[in-house]
Length: 78
Image 1 (tube, rainbow, N blue to C red):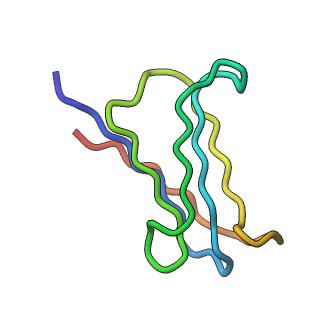
Image 2: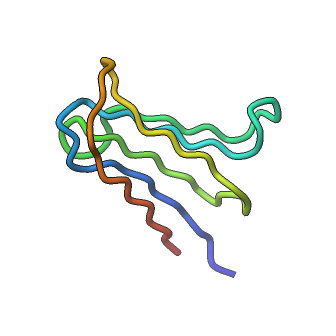
Image 3: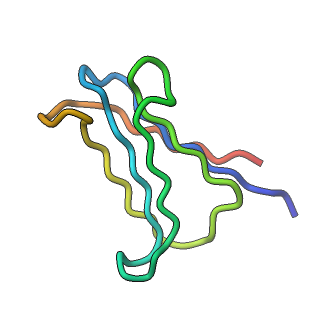
């Protein structure tokens, strides 16, 4: 079977965006990739190698506080 990878990223934010992806409940200690500036400019990007099946909570915020609009993109790669 193919190895799957997932990339989550933000685009179009006028602020410095932050992206956090979490599996499982907060008390279960699930995977928690978090990123600030790995995308283009000050956009966030996280990378999951071989993510587990299940439900993911995704949080998009700003590094310095405040609110902004952004587009969340989630891509699955083989």
